[in-house]
Amino acid sequence: MPIWLEASIRSVSILIGLFIITRILGKKQLAKLSFFEYVVGITVGDIAAAISVDLGINLREGIPSLLIWSLFPVGISYISLRNKKFRDFVEGNSTVFIKNGKILENNLKREKYTIDELMEQLRKKDVFRVADVEFAVLEPNGDLNVLLKREKQPLAVGDVFPNPPAEKEPQTVIMDGRILDEPLATAGLNRGWLKMELDKQGVAVENVFLAQVDSYGQLTVDLYDDKIQVPQPQAKKLLLAALKKVQADFELFALETEATEAKQMYERNAKKISDMLAKIEPLLKN
Image (cartoon, rainbow, N blue to C red):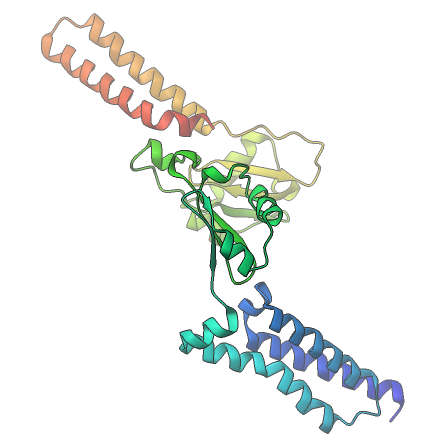
């Protein structure tokens, strides 16, 4: 067999084997590598390259070594899932660096962390005052997670509105100039609605690179030609204007009506819409 053909067969076989091993290891291994897993990965790569290129290495000698180095982390993960003490020994524990705005110097020393490194990690979290931190912990993978004090936390929608409306994920309804019927149906819409919305913006389906529908039923479009300006969706602003008009109409009817019962009905409905606007106006303005 020619040398180039043997090397090619070896390389393809090793690549297939590494792909299978990677699938066995799972996505967690790809997302977060510990130092041990990092070293194992480099070693497995070196072994695979040597087996592929060095024809002097017998496959019967190289494959067992490759399997041992590749599958050992699988065994470690399997045991870790079932034994917390072993998991703590292998992966380590989290270390608290800041508690109630106070730096725990002994924990910093134990993790060989300088105050400069701590401040750098805090700045990456947009935190510049240690006194603003309620809790900061160094995770086993080296990430620093920070919890700000209650009064320093950013204002969320739930802080203003006790029961904010649920926000659903946007649905991609057009991709590469092709309509995607399944996401369109998931959003409770159809091709007729989509064509009507595209006509409003003066856009043809084949010119759309990407189009998405949000939970409010607004269609946003990105065209192949970036120089063409697409009108911004106005559905929420139109809804807000319509609600304000209805409220004004009720108030006007209340002023013009002399009958007590009808007057009270108009005033009551105007108050209901006013209360509703106070809650949803910030959402409809964006």
